[in-house]
Image (cartoon, rainbow, N blue to C red; front, side, top):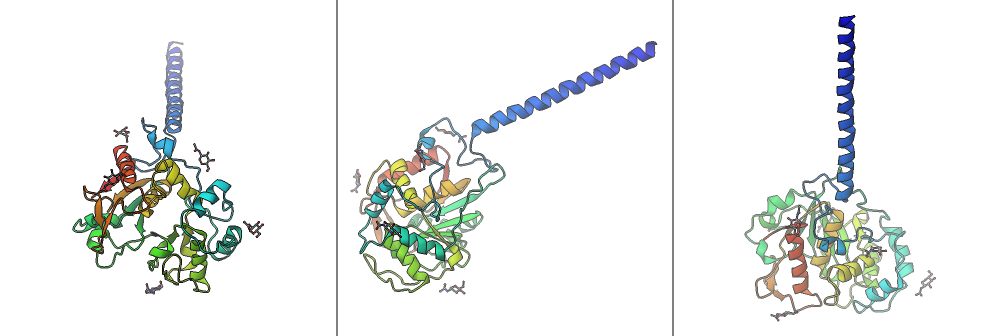
Length: 318
Ligand SMILES: *[C@@H]1O[C@H](CO)[C@@H](O)[C@H](O)[C@H]1NC(C)=O
Ligand SMILES: *[C@@H]1O[C@H](CO)[C@@H](O)[C@H](O)[C@H]1NC(C)=O
Ligand SMILES: *[C@@H]1O[C@H](CO)[C@@H](O)[C@H](O)[C@H]1NC(C)=O
Ligand SMILES: *[C@@H]1O[C@H](CO)[C@@H](O)[C@H](O)[C@H]1NC(C)=O
Ligand SMILES: CC(=O)N[C@H]1CO[C@H](CO)[C@@H](O)[C@@H]1O
């Protein structure tokens, strides 16, 4: 009898130990679940754009439900968006927006892009501005390591590979700043008027649009399935939410940066910034620009970028 009792009590001990073990395991899962939930936006990088932080400055501005890219389903514009967007630039002979969108998505991919954020994704992005401070930086190889390399307007790679890299996955441009796009890259149109959408259609069909408020290229070397269009609502959102309505509308560089915050998990910024007096030149030409010399609220954009740096939402290399 004695050995049997001993044996029984050791069974109980083992069962008890396993009981505690499984209890702890399930508690741990609950703790992890709660942790994940409170962290909200999650990704597989060390640091994610949508990680929560003590500061609510970021989440007062960042709205993940705003449409980033235009497609047929989200193309209807609220009256306030339409009014604001069509007031940005002089537009000759306003076409019917609804009809234009109809034609657009009979030509270009009508897809939901980049709605794949989640705990298993770590998408790293380099946003490459055109500032002269890139010259001599030797950032090229570092820039090329990113999943996405997003370039702005005319910013070339040829001849500047050492400092700006050679890879391009996205090029943001508008008709007046258009250049040929690498065969691997997406052309992301930033439309500032209905005519810009008509220009895009023209590039792939009749090639008859050669003039907006200035001369524009009738053709761009890019294939149809590589075309994306920034949503007008997104531009208004950047202006209102991120720039607090400073200036007339945001610069291409600033819109590109916020675009990256929305489609990437980690954002590294290169070639942004001016000298202390606000002047800057492109890395590829010598003409001098100034923050104040445009429709864009350069100094407010600069302050906002600095706040994003301070919060570790972006990393800047200069
Ligand atoms: C975020 O954007 C959506 C879509 O435009 C809008 O309905 C919503 O009110 C916005 N949220 C905030 C907090 O601004
Ligand atoms: C644009 O055309 C559609 C039909 O395609 C029509 O229903 C709509 O009223 C037109 N909008 C304007 C502002 O003329
Ligand atoms: C245009 O695109 C084709 C195909 O991608 C490429 O072979 C050609 O070199 C490009 N031309 C220019 C001027 O970029
Ligand atoms: C640029 O504009 C800001 C205010 O918007 C002003 O404080 C600054 O002095 C201006 N800089 C120059 C060089 O004009
Ligand atoms: C983890 C993290 O990024 N923490 C940052 C949160 O924001 C403060 C500023 O408000 C930064 O100092 C922290 O580094």
